[in-house]
Length: 226
Image (cartoon, rainbow, N blue to C red; front, side):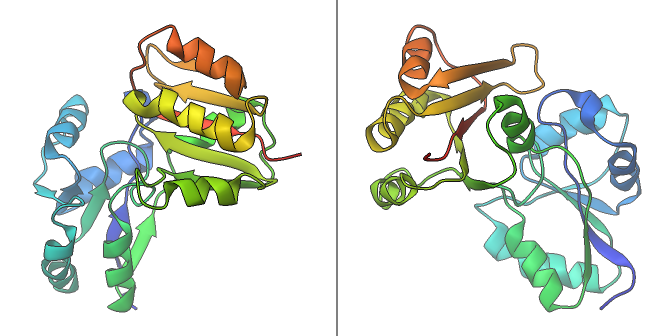
């Protein structure tokens, strides 16, 4: 394996720009280029910190086609930083395929510690955090029902991501499979100005979010079956 790190996985703030670490800031400045999920979002972050750097689009729609070229450039000595729009790459975001490809080519990969949405949501929920399952986004159609049925008897804490326009529908589905009295927590807009944490039974959460428009990134934490 190459002794020198070629690819850095760099977590970026999920909302509050002050959450970028000193080390992440240094890597973004020193890398030869930055692989970005959305170059527009990453440009705003870099401008905030006064960084000018070449950006290379790397997202779910092109990653299969660009990995070979990126790996070749890394093998030729370039150093890249990989970022997603927010949080840690490869956690419900692009990154896994590139990391795997680098490992296969004996290229050193280093993942920096940093922001990811499900950790503060889990800790903030007040639900047991010693054993949990991170499910991320469930499939929208095929396999969704089967997955919920399989998870209904899970005793460990469950963590999901969901889009705001699907939140009510998802909470209703959880209530149908887990029971409407199952305790849960919905975290919205973490670290941002309008951050909200709502706790209660699934029935109570459905009633709460039905009364108001829902915006922002959503993390749902559900107590396991007792």
